[in-house]
Picture 1: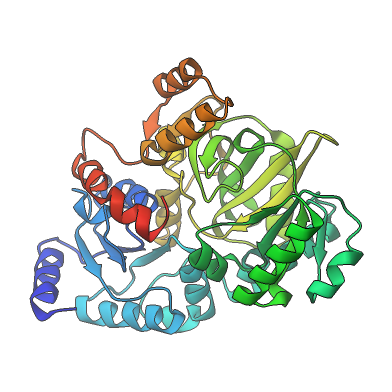
Picture 2 (picture 1 turned 45 degrees about the horizontal axis):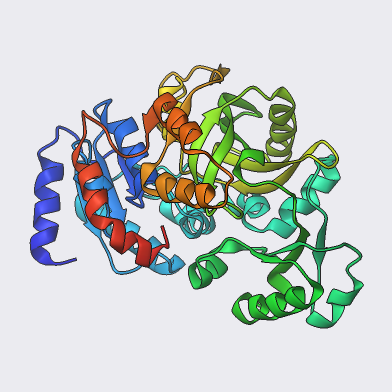
Length: 405
């Protein structure tokens, strides 16, 4: 950081009665949701990012710091500790918004606890979410349905796969693959495509990290998720949702339109998984409903906030603040559940997604207009906090190049 920038940050933090009590790593719309959740309650928040951030423009952000790199684990830890010492952030609660940051906080948790409150669990817990091979292994042990999955050590073993295309080719650990390709997974409609895609993925992440999986039919409307603040073996707050639309439509990197639903059986299996690993904190478990056999199958576990977590604030379960309050030993209610029928949209990605679906004949414009009219909250645009929405409009070309959305 430049010296002048450091001085401005120090002055902004000093202008508050207390130093920053939270550090949000990642200032996109997900980080913005955390900033607003805490800032509305008078919590001072520092936003840390290595990208051009919209959260820094929020009236609820106390200060913001942009650094060169938050993808490298050691650099992230050193940056946090340096900021903590320089700006007196002792006791601040750290909120990650990306997988690589979760890994950094988890693996170096004891070191970071010397200065911060780190709600991210230890690595022996997080590893079950970090690596899909371990996720699926534990799910099988617990009797939780997953897509048929094949782990192959080389392309020569692909012919032994006893399933039929189409297949999904995905990484066991998604970050390197995602940053290299901009995709969460690839589709293979033939055996020849399976071989070609497998070799491409193996060149990127190594053959041992490539998963071949049956492709469950359906797009966003078949995608479900269980979200919670989980502690002491039970949810203090929970929310079940359906992704009506996602970007891209097949292998969604991010939700674009989400609504809350009732699905008690999804709550039961998710809580069984989380109890088994002794989980604490905010978490999202992603599922896809398979109409062929009527089973809802676990796809992924995210040990952090998720993109649409601000839907919870509208639905009466303010996940970031509940975690923050628990970290500071403030009273936290138990058993909060989001009611069905509350919806969230991110227009910056939902509009292009909808246009794609309309071009394919998968969505009518009247149905789309009705869904927008019914939306209860938008991810970024807010009358009480308008600057992040204006900033996002200006950053759309940058985001398209940097992230693909």
